[in-house]
Image (cartoon, rainbow, N blue to C red; front, side):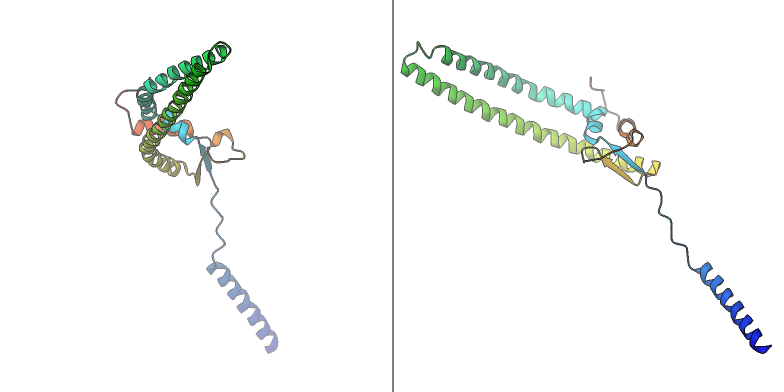
Length: 186
């Protein structure tokens, strides 16, 4: 009976060892469920009180220049029409001078339009950066509070997202609560 008791003792010892090993080895951790939110970042920034105020300030700053460019474009169109309509009745020298005037004004208009565009883009980038700094803190807080693992900007390619994942309106509301503007823009 001694050989049987050795075998039984060995089996009991193996079972105990296996039991102890399985209790001491942690089970592989289950990954936390992923929660992903999508956010229309630029639209959210522009929809905040600060964003509306910045947009109104930009419009006030650049609208006079834009209107002046439109007026010059209208004048240029009139000169083009005058050149086309008078081509048969104008002498060569008048046509040449008118063509030079049109070319000079067109070149000046294009330069000024490009300058306006560059200035507006620079101002937009500066204003958006100011708002973005505050917005990123709001998004960080919101994402942590709501248990999101990722918040994605809709400006990036998204193949599909459920509407319930869109947190843009929540972010706008939270931003405005944390950063009230002095006077709401209209």
